[in-house]
Length: 194
Image 1 (cartoon, rainbow, N blue to C red):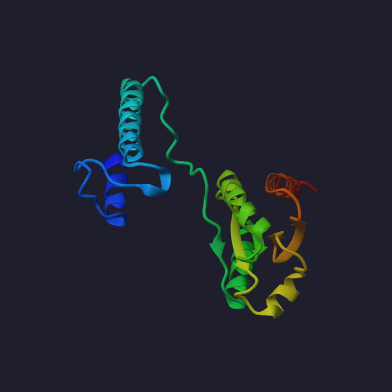
Image 2 (tube, one colour):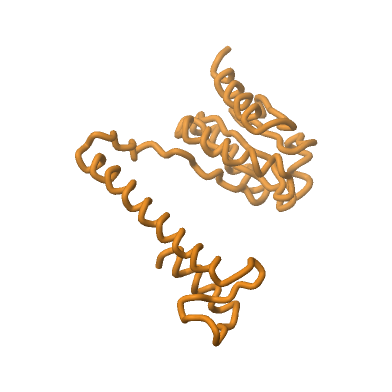
């Protein structure tokens, strides 16, 4: 269904037809006249035609192999795995110690705007360090307060690096998400150095 027809269908449900208008025009009194609706529908139809013309050459290029394909073996981003309780937290830390891997944990809250902006940046960062470093997130409102205190979290978002069962470093993200992501990258890179 095109944008024009879906828009017209929605308007048709919201406004009654006037007996004085042709069947292809709908009254739209808030914006002036029914002429607006038909002009809008015509404009949307032109937009669809333009999109069809511009996407066809792109499809031809990709079929000819002129545009390099994306490497599907490496993900662009990886969802942060949630940790829901203290037992799961202990299990993640123990597994990472046994596998000699580092773990990055984002301590966040679903009401924290900076946390919400930061999470997608860390998901992209997780793809860069996969599988050497595993990334997790913990919503402080969904775990016992004892766990938050035990980890030493006082502000949000807090990003911690854990290795060998111990907290090695942390970044408190009170500023722009891209700056925090850079600090986390530096924290991970510095972790491997003596």
